[in-house]
Image (tube, rainbow, N blue to C red; front, side):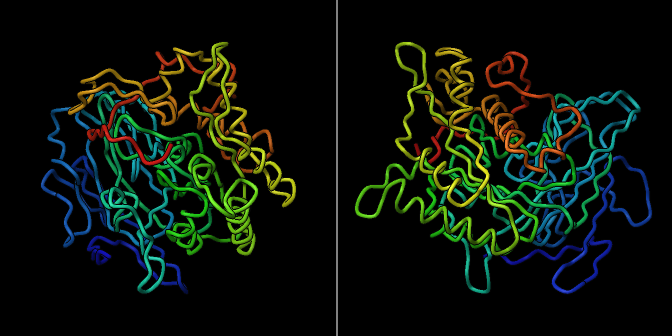
Length: 424
């Protein structure tokens, strides 16, 4: 476990019971303000300072390259308020956090215009309790989701950041996402999942904490300590979303199966959430891109979706039938056009990619964005209170009429990976 960084810039820290109230303020436009840390290109993140530009060189004020800024903070939820804009030129800024969670999308500012926006982000590390840690996979060790700092990515055609404020918050419901590679925060292009897109559509009165990981099934998620870690942060009024089934169906042998070990694991999630006053929500697995000769989706998940529906009824748990919704989505896209929602790219699209990528399970950013909207429509169908926290710019989405891929604008993060995520 990495030692916690000493943060020299904490402007207000008070201890109330077990909770720390913490706030940090920075300026990036040379304006002098009392109690605010002024950031220059020389402020590179270090353990000594606990803040600074991170992962690559700081912006030089001339190019429009994306940049990262990190602050060492304890685990918890943080309200992030950004002031976007510049006196010198117009801008267009996208803000993502930790492992490419999308919060602000293509926000345009005119020269001399400044716009303030806020969102709440969850930060965590692997520590569960003294001497006990989440068993993360080797490839996760570089994931921004599991370290001791909160990292923000400023991207877009012309990213402009004037000021940044980070405040610890305790009073917003957290939606804990548990699942596999279709849910996880994917760090690198061109991979993406719905769990990292969905925060973009919600205001600063809720927080998404994405604990999903590629290759996980319900029982391995528990065995790795991922659920136990989530429970250390869970409080009454929170939500626990569970989307499993893709990898669970590979498990064979005595006691395995949709109505056996799978049900036992999901029942553990449900009971643990309810014991803490949180609300469990089941989500059936997303369809794979598996068309028959007639252009219809062939279900590849055996009886796992039906088992989840049975458990939802038995335990009186809300269920989002993403399996059915995504069937409608992919069939509406069609056999060829649906490739634009998945990781289908010709050779040499990305550095080191000598062969074509043809993945019919994992989404690209456009596909993940569409699936996130499907989940939201599922929330609305089962009348979850969370839907009242949708941003005002969210328009009702019909999976039978998906967004035009040509209209989707995504500024790629600087890091790409051709290795397929774990799982099927």
